[in-house]
Image (tube, rainbow, N blue to C red; front, top):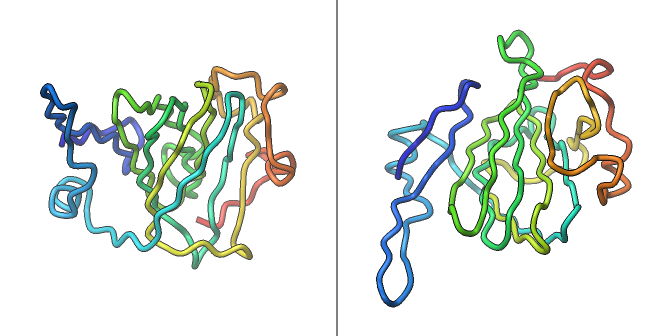
Length: 182
């Protein structure tokens, strides 16, 4: 695996070594030893999967302390634009983001540490998205930032006003109206 640092400390793109032959391909999608050597210790406790159609945008989600989550995400069918926004108070990159296209073909993964909001936009007809979390989901700790916040400077490659959103995601605050718990 290749671990690629991004401009935001802690957010890492992971590219697996893919072995192809006449039968297809094989790759190791996760190795605790390699991950901990490159990124640090993380104890993943929950795996999640979602299926979404073109134009769906999910996010930008996070969980408040003490239920914060780090995530390791990937797209196993289709294509998404995946985004992590730094919400850590006092961070030199507060409010900045990393965006990376994750596809079934490139097999890339993105590691998002605690203290970040996370979301994605579906770019293909269908996308199946998987993620590992290092803490259990806690509904009372749910939080979010609006995907339509222009101050974040995210090029979603989909117009947020045309996106398919959950009711919850339509009502998240803008970053300027947000008091970060991180």
